[in-house]
Length: 94
Image 1 (spheres, rainbow, N blue to C red):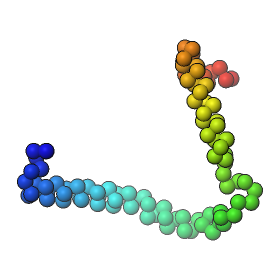
Image 2 (image 1 turned 120 degrees about the horizontal axis):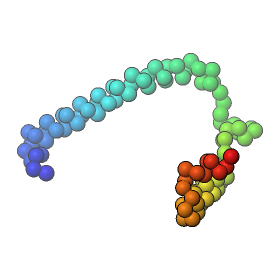
Image 3 (image 1 turned 135 degrees about the horizontal axis):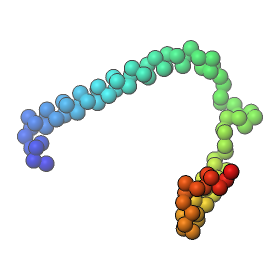
């Protein structure tokens, strides 16, 4: 790295990188801080999600989700092997 050999140039590069990181943080704070404030005022802020009463906490349990993913992936790979385009998978399901 020829351009960063001098200490003066390395310092300048470090300052520019720090400014870029700080600007990114400040830019994201424009959206994150009002969102956090509204979250505290939301009706969902006081919900107790630590208890798992009726199974509604998870939309799909982990093992069936993995099995569904594997089933769809294997079916897609098999269709690609025999020459059916992936775009036609949705059309055939109807």
